[in-house]
Amino acid sequence: MTYLCHILIILNIYASLGIALNLLVGYTGLLSLSQAVFLGVGAYSTALMTHSSIPCSWPLSILVGIGISSIMALIIGAISLRFRDDLFAIATFSFQVIIYNLMQNLTGITEGPLGISGIPSPRIGCVVLTSYWAFLVLSLVFAIVSIYIARRAVLAPYGRLLRAIREDEISVTAMAKNTATLRVSTFVFASMISSIAGSLYASYLTYIDPSIFTVQESIFILAIVIIGGPGRLWGPVLGAALLVSLPEGLRLLGLPSSVAANTRQILYGAALVGCMIWRPQGLVGKYSLRSDERG
Amino acid sequence: MTTVALKKHFDGTKAVDSVSLSIFGRTIVSLIGPNGAGKTTLFNVVTGFLPPDIGRVFFEGRDVTHMAAFRRARLGMGRTFQEMRLIRRLSALENVWLALPNQRGETVIGALLGLHEREEKRRRAEAMRWLEYVGIAETANQLAGELSYGQQKLLTVGCCLGMGAKLLLLDEPVAGVNPALVDRTLELLERLRHEEGKTIVLIEHNMDAVMRISDRVVAMDEGRIIADGTPEEVRESAAVIEAYLS
Image (tube, rainbow over all chains, first blue to last red; front, side, top):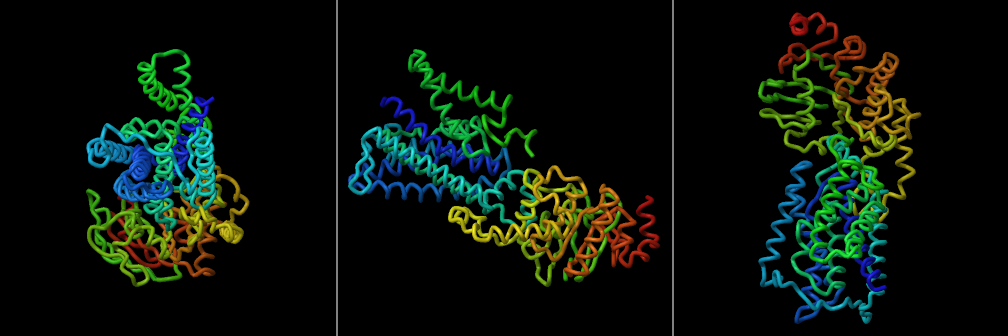
């Protein structure tokens, strides 16, 4: 039972990450490979602040995480968004790698590869959340709120603008819209949601290390969006359901854990490639990322 | 109203070579010339999609030479594109709606707070009005990609109007359009000039259309202006005839 809870909690967290990235990838057409940066920032903010000698409140650590993520997103976004399409992806990829190495090596702050263990449970006021059920509810609430926020954004003129930018940015510029600002603000918005997901993740796992910041993590989140279906609100939820339960399914097949971990990587990669070849719009997506199919 | 002075642009070759052009309000000016004359490049520089190498662009007395394209559009410079740029996946109505300025739900925060909800009805009506004005109201809920070519061209004009453009730079508004719609489009342009006081500059190859509605014709060849006057004057001009024949 707790195992199922665990899966669902992870699923909820990754669904939220996918929903955030979907705004960028699915709705605006920006292939970002740096989402794990913000996941990691949120995670480490909460970890460091709640675990420190002067323990800070859990909600505050989340806010700090959001703050730092936003600033980083502004910088990364402002630079990367000067590029189009593939170059943008490479730029975000580069930032991802840079940040990972920073986290790995700034051992003074982040304890490097040792990671941070013993992260205390979240405490909101007098309520301390320790049980699996508590985390399940918390992560579920967060996932639902993420979908709700994304839905509001997408149904508004803002959402229409994003979809228009995705299709023809020059057209939108000619209609007197500041597309640069729109793209950066979407980038920052997605980073904020990812940061909160990271904070939740850290509190749940009680131990984090720089592996949260890896490129593989970013690619995993991207895979959730693409395989689930970009441009559809529920796409990332389906994608998360599929990709989170897949490796667990492997484990049930009896594969030793050392093999299972690497097989996972192969599976994600294969799933992503297969998706691009046979079903670029993902399971339920409205938007295909293949350049020959793009509008 | 708009003055465009001395621009020189190198695109490998001299795409726009020392063009000084002044256009004043409430008129229809046609820009003609053989392919490669620099007409579209001129549009691109004026609207800010291409930077000039030398020279300045003025709009309503302001120097907009280094102003971003979207800001020039905000000042009232509307344009259409030779290659027909539309958001095909949105409906015709949504395309015009997109162009409406100062909407409150266009930022992340505005969208989340739902600031647009109060004005939604008004905005929808406003967008519909422009669709009716250009004469394609019946296509409102069809995807822009499904409209006929001529309807799409009318839609691009509708978007300019929705945006509040005072100056409309139309790149080949009737090229490739069926004759019935050509008439409608030309009537629309004349109405825009008379009723709405718009200034229209159009690039066109359709000489009948040019002769019919232009107050003034400017001819270009190889990046330079070779003739500038009434339609009759330009038609008789030796330089223009030679440019088209050579």
